[in-house]
Length: 406
Image: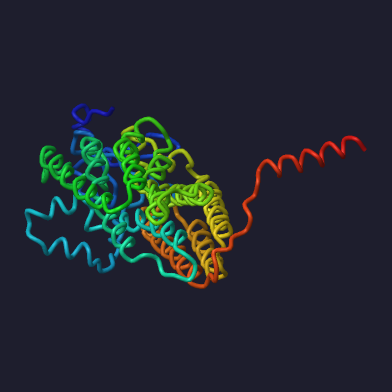
């Protein structure tokens, strides 16, 4: 650590040229600069973290910029008009921190939670019929409430961590706008409303839905222990893939809902890894883990594997339920969207990662519309005969044995 006191008599020109680099990890290389005056750069855009002295700061190192070239602040990105955010801002001030705690100003998470429910409801719908609108409304309300509850739980767990992450330090609990006690009371109200929504379903679905609470509560702590918290989020976020089918039929057809569940988990691994790349430098510094850090530069390859798994499982779900050509056409479109998303992803550009993450709402909508139209065009409930794994194994064994006897 440099001491400015010992160098206070050195010329300013000498101090301004003293630059040393500190390698944090392979993901985060930073410069340590000694400046003769207080740094006045935009800390939000430049990702600057003070170390206790006005003249000692750590900046993200950009190897494409000459080492001693003057730094220019980037132009702030333009943000599109957001109805939800403006609506929350127009409500009474005492309510706004709680609404932001539930992320009602950022509805993308609600959509990502709802789409697996919608897929399952469509798959369980009888041939030639529209999905039950009442059930769609129930699951929509459940997604809105439980996503908010999950965010409240997450912020309560991460109160101290969020202070060290640039993107999250202004959240209601971290900024002091909502106390922990108020957050706990608010969480109780959210869970109460969620229970009322869940009780609209049959008892099989009530018990199945209640079984997901363990995942909801423990997900926020996973990033402290494993590089795969996105997998745990996928287990929780896609529980609706099981719940939607049981809400219609009274039980689960595991040969259909399990592949659908795997497809949803694979999708979550895609969009939440992209999301995690926004905070990877901060996460490295404070010791948090994520798939963004684990995959590193191999992220596009890993995401391609998850996209292949997702489309394959969705294709199997369509085949096992006798879906028609509109569904498979929708899968082609969704696959193309994912391929473009992964191919053009810049994992070192926070704005690009945010845009790619939000674009996943169209992935969920595409699959939903494909299932809806495909089910409407189905003429009967005839489905292909299920594949008997034992028959397949016995057939392979006979071929191997006969080849060996030759």
